[in-house]
Image (cartoon, rainbow, N blue to C red; front, side, top):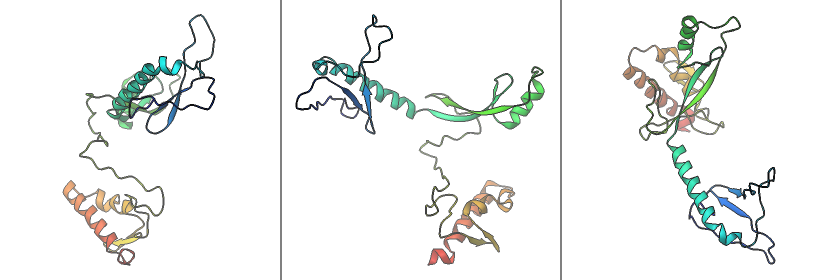
Length: 211
């Protein structure tokens, strides 16, 4: 059964002895198995089905494909945010500062060691994004990620265009330049944006870029 066409295609050997169902998701193949009868307690799922199962169960296979597509669309609309979970009481707080406040305001037992862990919360369609978070999947957002290789261009710019010099200082990467104190300490977002643009221009004006 294909999730792309919502149709079943039959492929048979010269002398088939059983039927096997496979779901094609558009990316990979997943086996579909039959559920044993309720009276067969402990029986394994049915991977090899009778020869006539291809006709009898084709509609069920298509319904599984439809359900897969619906779940895939639902997951596309999900957004994930990071949170801090208290190791003592399990409370979920926004960040490290909130966890510190939680530890001073909430009484825990004597075994509490101020431990916490980072957890990921899933927001469904219609759920409001918490303050201070950006939806990286939004059409109006462009996300930059560090390069996986030395030749790939990205925010880190660890490529042949680095290092470069900006305002008399040598920077190994673009990321190092725009996260430096000279940029971070600027009083306004407009000034910081201008500094980032200057760093990009300086990198692409380097001898390596011109060569």
